[in-house]
Image 1 (tube, one colour):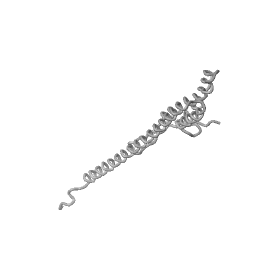
Image 2: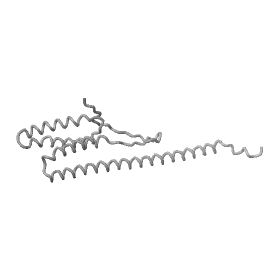
Image 3: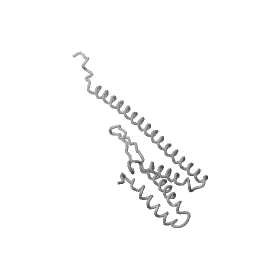
Image 4: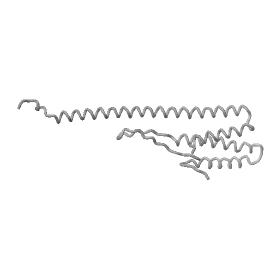
Length: 169
């Protein structure tokens, strides 16, 4: 049984399509062993890219109630977000390629994997910074609203007050 939400089902479908296509492409010869490794890397890259683009968390400021709302798209396979599947599939492809590829190509794979991880971590930190800025804006908006309400109440109190009450009658 496959459990997915959103577009998470695309991960195994893309892998199967790429595996079949690469098998047909390299049907004979020595390159057949590279067919599935090719599928792992392309599927992992596409899954990570699509998951990173589709699973964006957006923090919205509701101005009527001055609350922060978190809006996120959820595209998962077996309760794991798509972008994490991409990293896992590329790592598994890397593991499978250890016996096939030369050392220099494996070094390039490690550099690419490291760049992908750093990019992901940088985006996560940027999202936290944006969330903190929105919280600060919400607090400032709340403080301005309180000050505005206090001024309106003071103005209403002054308008309602009878100025002649202390005058002799």
